[in-house]
Length: 167
Image (cartoon, rainbow, N blue to C red):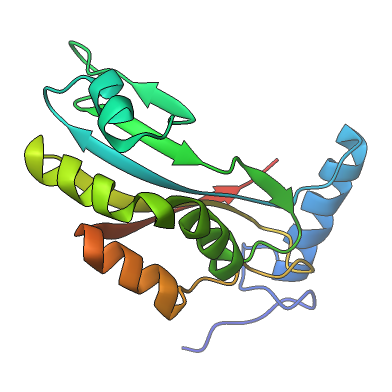
């Protein structure tokens, strides 16, 4: 038996996408702000047992943050270089990753050597919080050949984490 659709366009018992979107927008307006996209691209060296200060000394570049391995979390120690978080309707991972790699490129050989010497992992991490507001564009996700070449020379992977940015 076919599903009967109510006049609002949703399936029986479920509000339509339009009704849900209106409720979300009304809720955001009531809170005094609207939801948008958030993004961060960072490069990290990480491992179980190493001193981030030694990485800084060997690479010749200061990280923007470090996280030391703890009993419960984190499971690894992290040496991180980031340009920071961006909150905007348009998040362009191509541009963000290119800007970050342009800062790291002068240290390519040192980063690769430290990774090998201390037996570390390297990653270009993309963290996105994507709005549920359909009127806002989803992030542009991709990497130019310069970024790919840099990551290949270091032996780094790419990880993309996505989350819903809900009110």
